[in-house]
Image (cartoon, rainbow, N blue to C red; front, top):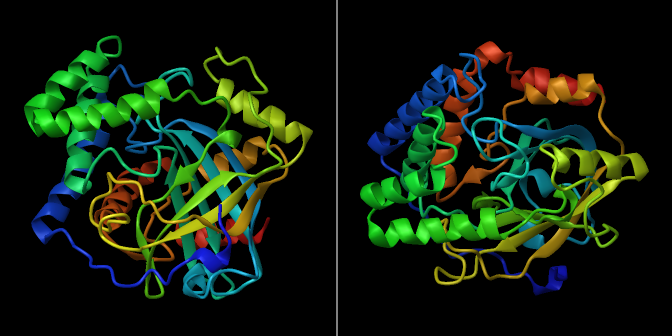
Length: 348
C-alpha cells in the first residue's frame, strides 16, 4: 500500500461499450443460467431462482466504512467526496459458485458492500480475490465460461467438472483463450488456498470516479493475524474462521484505490490484466461483531450492482445490466428495494 502522494490523476483513458445486441444477449443468458440451475436436482435450489453467481453466503454482517481525510485529490468524488466520513455498511462475503458447495472446493471468494452517502447515493463495492483481474477479457467471454460451468453443475458433473470444463472451454473459446482462462482459474482456485476470508485481498472491476478510471480493493489490515481459527477441512471452515475471529474482536481491511496510468499497465477494456499501478489507501472497513440470524437473513435479501455509486467503464458496463437482470429474476426470493435497503442501514 502506498501514500496518497504516489497517485496520479487517473485521466487519459478510453472506454469501450458493448453494443446493444451483445448487452441484450448477456441479459438473456443470465436468465437462462438462473433457470437451468433452479430446475436442476443437483444444485440444491429446489426450483427457486437464486443468485447467478456467489450463491453461498459465508457471512452477512453490518460494519463501518471509514474514509480517510488525506486521500488523493483525484479520489475526492462520488462516494469518497466527503472525507473524512463514516458510513454504516452491509457486508456479504461469499463463495463464487452459483450453487452451494463445501468451502474446501476450489472457488473464487467475493465480498460485497452496500452503503448510502449523506446525499443519499446508493453505493456498492463488489470485489473478488481473483488476483486483481478476471479470468475473462470481457463480459461476453465471462458469460461463455459461466455457461459452461452452469451446464456442468446442472448436470451434476461435479466429480468430472475439471475435465468437462477443459473440453467445453477449448471447443467454445479456442485453444489459446481456453488455455489462458483455465490457467488463471487453476492458479486462483486450486493452487491458491484460502486460510481465512480475513487474510484475503479483494479487487473490483474498473469504474469512473470524477475524471479518473479506478479500481478499488480491500486488503487485510496490518493487525490481522495469519492462519485460520477453524478446522480447515470442514465444509464450512471459512465461515467458522471468520465467526471465531469476530468473537475475539473486530475484523478489518484497508480500502485502496488504483488509478489509470496507461493502456499497457492499467487497461480499461481488458479485465483479464491486473493493474500495475500503486494501491493507495483511502479508508478502512471494520466488522466489529458476529451477526445475528436476523441480520444475515436481511443482508441475504440485498441486491448489489457494481455501477451503484459510480459511472461504469469497461466490463462494468455489462455487469451493470447483468446484475440488475439477475436481481430482477430472483424477486420471488424477497429482494429488498433500494429504499428498503436504505431503511435497513439507517436502522443500524
